[in-house]
Length: 269
Image (cartoon, rainbow, N blue to C red):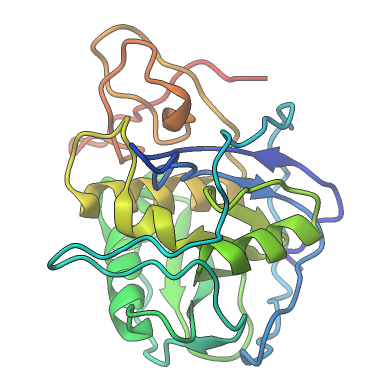
């Protein structure tokens, strides 16, 4: 079973006027009991063994913000970010093939909160493309991934409004303040604000920032802890909390180079 009983809080990234990893946090993770929300289907966690949890850093607070009291307006061509939603989710029903050659196949589902302008099928396609990329976690030769629409799973990616993110994460003890992402048990909860707006620390296109969100959070799910900058001018590790600052590193979304070299850094306690 993938759910973990220990509580471990991680905070990752943020954005300009709106903080963190997906602006305010691309990499929040709490290893605790998952909170079932809304009317989303109740898929069953797989019985495959869970990786050892990463060392727990001390939990840091999200930056002050006005919270999800008002919707972020949409500029032309950009998805609106409602302050909150109904807390129910639509599951992407497309099943994918296994990507990667590793023997540890991790089944995952993608759910999107109802009432937001992000089709579940489109989100699933984007997330599965990140996990299939050869710069991603499949390059370790251990892990492989498969998108599923039902049945046993190892983790679930949920894209949710800031208010719903706060409710899910807050029930497990994380203070997200309408800004950051989190992971709770087998749920990776992606704050819609971060998915749409990105992070001020990340100067690449929004698609690359979303790749960072996915790679950072899935990295936690497969047992990786936080890492620091390996040196000025070098790529920031995907497991670095880039929203807190780059410490001289260059923003980077991927755990591996195209040649297969791991883009790591020193472990952060």
